[in-house]
Image (cartoon, rainbow, N blue to C red; front, side, top):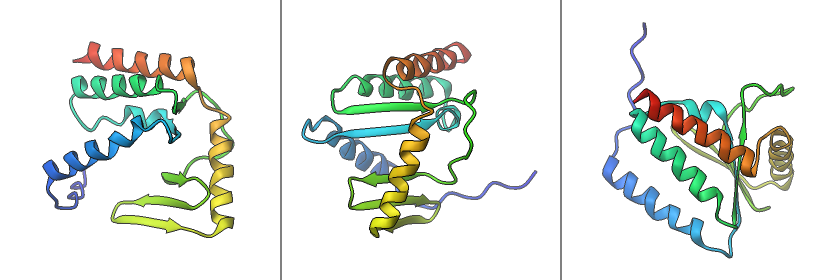
Length: 147
């Protein structure tokens, strides 16, 4: 078995504090957020099962906010193509693609249109609203049962 790649060095406590601070914007009712997650993203266990359950519960709670939509693309759905990387669309202005060592920022309208089409394509196969909440809640229950 190969030795895992060492993560980039950094101040974990500061990174966590910044992420929590950044999440405060989710409660800004003047902004709208749509998150589309794959089942594999929800199952990728980076921490203890009890922490995973709490994180999934948090997603379900956030999904009840009127300005947030959360979708889940389950394994059992046949999709003609697959996502090759994660990306974030900021309205019609910027798309960011997350890499292991940084971010790629796209500003060309053709690129932005392409990623809007990708999000729409994958979103059409996803569970939304109660379907997504039920799916995520079942996964959280599974993590609790495993702990």
